[in-house]
Length: 503
Image 1 (tube, helix red, strand yellow):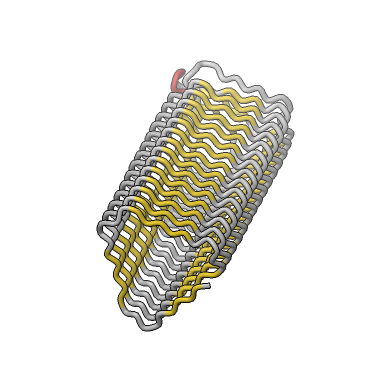
Image 2 (cartoon, rainbow, N blue to C red):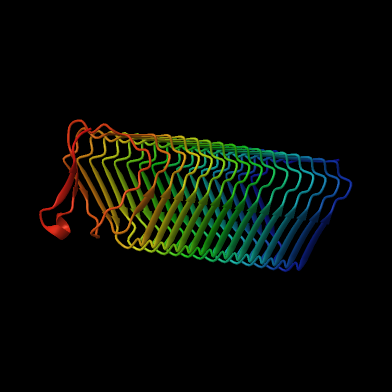
């Protein structure tokens, strides 16, 4: 049992410039406690260490209390390998209450490995950090193996800026197979920036997480720049609940320009909830993704609450294939009350496939959208398979303009064989424009279709072919009581049009 207490140290500096190997072997320590309550500055300079190894096999508790540190700086410029083996630690606690700046500079590390097999609880309390900066420019491999952690809790309530610069990482792997709960509380972060320029593969394996909760109440800007990632894979097979609460984010920007494959496997999620009530702008730029695959086979409920978004923009220029497999969702709800503009630009998608075979209810509430624009100019095939939806409801009460431009779609197929009720409430749309060359609908079991479009000024359906085929099965039209419904075919035939009188 080793206890160290340095209450009045004001500065600690380590300079070990020519050490080639450092090894710690403390195999029978049962408790380690650090209390450095008045240190104002800590600096490490280990410029020529080639290997660092820690082996602390029997430690049961580690506690750090560094309550008055104002600055921490690490400079480990020539370390080639870092290995931690802490196989029997049951509890780790960090309390760094007054740190104002933390800086890591590990420019030449080629491999980092953590093995913490028996930790049952990890707690971080860094309540007054104002800036955190990581610079790990030459790491080629990072591996985390935390097999028995049951709870991870982060409390970073006063961080104002977080910056990660990991420009040369080629592989990142996380294996957290027994975590049952993960909680992030970052209530005062104002800016988060990630720069991961050369990562070629990112893999997450979190197979036993039962609950994930994010609380980021005061983030004003989030920026992701992952320009060279070639593959991203998420495997979260046992998560039962995911909750995001990002109530004060004003801007979110994703720039993932070179991702070639994205795969999500979330097979056992039962509930997903997003609460992003104050986001004013969301921008996605995924210009080189060639394949996107979602597999969410056991989600029973999905809820989106994005009540204050004013602008949403998607730019997915080079996606060649998008596949959604959401076979067990029973309820999907969207609440986007204050969106003023939605813009989707998917100019090079060649195939889009949706498979939502067990959804029983879909509800959209987009009450304040003023403009919706879709530009999908190079899609060659779109397929929807929604075989078990029993009710679909759209409430878009304040949209003033809707524009669809799907000029190069060669095949659109809808298979909605078990929908029993479809309801559209578009009470304030002033203009709707569709441009679709070849469209086929198969709606064999719809028993009721209701349109409420009280304020339309113009509605155009412009087919680029001579004949329109509609297979309706049993279809009951209701709602066209104030206007006739016309298909204007004047583009080919001058004055001809087909008008259906009110029922």
